[in-house]
Every structure is written in structure tokens, then in C-alpha cells.
Amino acid sequence: MRKIAVLTSGGDAPGMNSAIRSIVRYGLSQRLEIIGIERGYQGLIEGDFRKLNREDVSEIVQKGGTILKTARSDEFYKEEGQRKALENLERENIDGLIVIGGEGSLKGAFSLYKLGYPVVGIPGSIDNDIWGTDYSIGFDTACNNVIDAINKIRDTAAAHERTFVVEVMGRDCGYIAFTSGLVSGADVILIPEVPLDFPYIIEKLKERQKKLKRHNIIVVAEGVGSAYFIGKQIEDRLGISTRIVVLGHIQRGGSPSVLDRTLGTFMGIQAVRSLLDKTYGVIIGWQSNKPVSVSLEEVVKNKKRVDPKLYYEVESIL
Ligand code: F6P
Picture 1 (cartoon, rainbow, N blue to C red):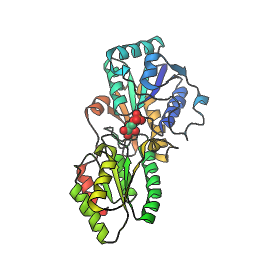
Picture 2 (cartoon, rainbow, N blue to C red):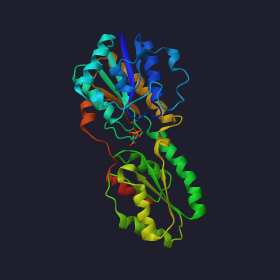
Picture 3 (cartoon, protein in one colour):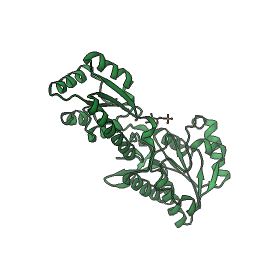
Picture 4 (cartoon, protein in one colour):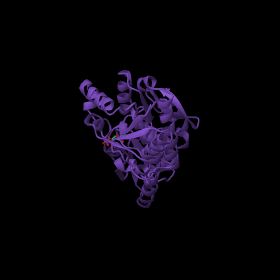
């Protein structure tokens, strides 16, 4: 293997730049040529390639987003798009590809692998919904962003004795809501993995009213449904002043946390090693505090979601 490429795809995630940096620097140390593909699979189809040198990845470790840019490419998921992608890789004599991205992007990586191309994936998504890894790059920073926001919301909630419904991202996975809600002292956490139970929410808030707790923080994962609808139900049924905050893309930005930089750094090195060792068709996951190889087939076949048992277990501390 002499020349490898890297792309970032799907939603950007803080820490992706750490992975790019270690792929480039470790790859160069192994005498590989490294090609950066811009705008994910769309750039792969359009041949948007550039050579990456050591200095191209200087001063990026502290930055969120991705220096390679990213996109959600519909074209790549058609046979024609994948054919064009392979043609471009072959024309440029690229021997292997590292894909940094979430569930959909890793499905794309598996499609290329099934067509016979050497591919290794790195889980990069704030949602933490990728099977085979304890963490995906970006999740930790996103949770820190949520915690920071909730700390601020709590000040005004307490001052006005209001209830806040805070909607967080995660698509159909509740990890961001569950983790950040737990550690920020939320009073109610709603995730798509467990059925929405209005009578329970109302009962819990009534209990709090009895204890003279006059402000509440309810963290709701976007996969549960509209935070506005939930807020309206609470206001109508309890007559308490309620406000809605949809945190949105603010969760995806900012300087990556220690964990996300660490994941990016070690997963990047391991992904290059995997290509050099001819271990293709895998992702580099993170289990028990170290990088591990997990088959892409397993990753795309399975879904990682919050265990409802764990949710009900910790309920008593909310
Ligand atoms: O997958 C990451 C994520 O941020 C999800 O949590 C969210 O539902 C989605 O991407 C938003 O996508 P977009 O940035 O394309 O609106």
C-alpha cells in the first residue's frame, strides 16, 4: 500500500480533525502518500482530491468541524455514484480509503468494501449510535455543549420559577439526552428507546410541586417528538409557565473535548495500521479504553441504542 485517502461524511463531529491529523502524520511516517477527499462521498464522486502534507494538518486539533468538509450525498447511494467513486479512486492509484462518519456513512463504506475496495471506517457522529464502539467521535463534546447550555438555562429557570423543555439532537437514538440529562441534573429525561408516558411526567412534576420545587428541566431527545408539543401538554395540564429551547446545531460545534481528541488520535493511527495490515472492511471502535477492530458488516447490521433497563434503573436519581 503506497497511497491512501481519507474523507469525512455525514454530520460533522468535533474530533474529526484529530483523526485526520493522526491519519496524515502516522501515514507519512509509514511512507504513505495521503490524499484528502473534500465534501465526503460527493467529493469522491466529483474527484475533489488534494494531497495532504504534515503542515496541512497543523493547528487543527483544537478545531471543531472538519477541514475536509462534509456532505450528505444521495448520489453515492446509487450504483452509478459508487461506480464513479471507484473509478476515481482507481484513476488516482489510491490503494485504500478511510471513511470517518456516522451510521449512514459507514453503510456507504461497507458498500465500497463489498465491491472489493479496501476500506476502513472510523465512527464519527455526535449521536453515539454506532454499534461496536463505546463512543463515537463528537459525542462527548456534544454532551459537554448540552451541559453548558443547561447550566445557563437553569439560572433563568430558577429565577422565573419556570419549566424548560430542552430538545437535544440524536436522531432516533437517545444517548445525548440520556447522558447529558443525567449529569446535568435534569428532572425528566425523554428518549426514543422508551415509550413517552405523559401521565408519568405530569405525576412527577406534581410531586415536585408538592415539595416546593418550582422549576424543572426536562431534556427531550429529538427522536421522541416535538418539544413544543410536550411543553404545551405540560403547560395545559399543570398550568405552569413553560419555555422551550431547541439546542440544534450548537451541539455539534466548538473545540473538541479531551475524549474526542483522544478517540480521533488513536482511531486515526489504528485505521492506517489496519490498511497496512490488510485488515479491511472494519471500523476502528473504542472498547474498554482502547481501539478495537469491528467488522463493518456487524456494524451496519446492528443498532446501538440506550438500554431501557439502564434508563429505568437510573430514573430514581432524577
Ligand atoms: O447525525 C448527527 C445529527 O446532528 C443528528 O443528531 C441530527 O438529527 C442530524 O445530524 C441533523 O442533520 P443536519 O445537520 O443535516 O440537519
